[in-house]
Amino acid sequence: MLCPRCTGKTRVKNSRPYENYVYRQRACKDCGYIFPTLEYEPGVINAMAREACLSVRLFKKYP
Image (cartoon, rainbow, N blue to C red; front, side, top):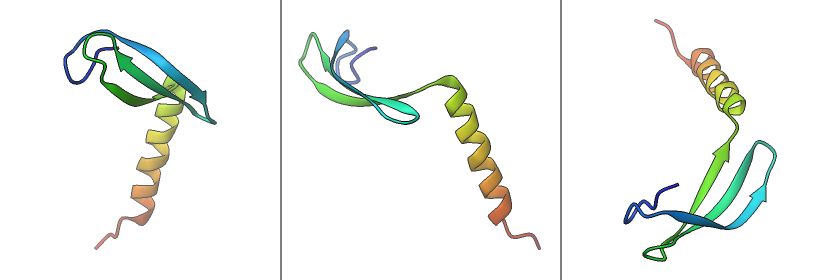
């Protein structure tokens, strides 16, 4: 993964699994910038998108 500040390479400092994703704290090797990431599995993202789309359809008011 690239650093959002300087586009240098990063390393993982801390990693914690949760139910549907992994929380990682990353640090840039070049500038030292520390930033968090949430990484989802591809199947989880598709399921979340379908669920969000369905909830929008259910709550949308029709004329």
